Image (tube, rainbow, N blue to C red):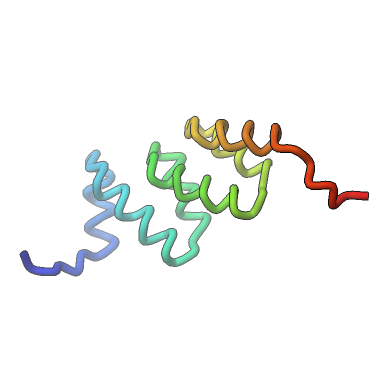
Length: 95
């Protein structure tokens, strides 16, 4: 199969027509570019892939508020990660 270079506009049009794979591809492109604003917009559009990618970033950064926001936007796994982090034992670094 030929390697196709699909432009963002085509992906956007397909996503707007309900194509979830195109929405996932847009999320992957936004993640690769570090475009958190676009990822957030895609999450608001209902992209589980964007939720996953934002959750992964928030967990790595230890950003509890962002995890709550992602969970509130409908990505349940962010809520699970938030609970896990909140229940984790304190590492004793705070004085």
